[in-house]
Image (cartoon, rainbow, N blue to C red; front, side):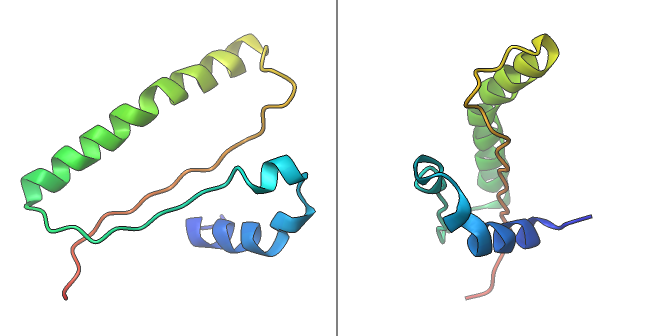
Length: 85
């Protein structure tokens, strides 16, 4: 099984072979925050809430087999964890 970081490394190695409109569609970000454990749990809930409509759209497209022809699989991953300064 390919881990999340290996998927990212594969994308970085091969992204120039994608059609030009797909190359620019990828994005990423990183942030350092100072949060309590409860705030971190709230952040997780909020991030999952943002993704939920997109999960539902994907599920309906798969179940109906009626996705627009230009859809492609998209892999999303995020990690949050305590870090010592």
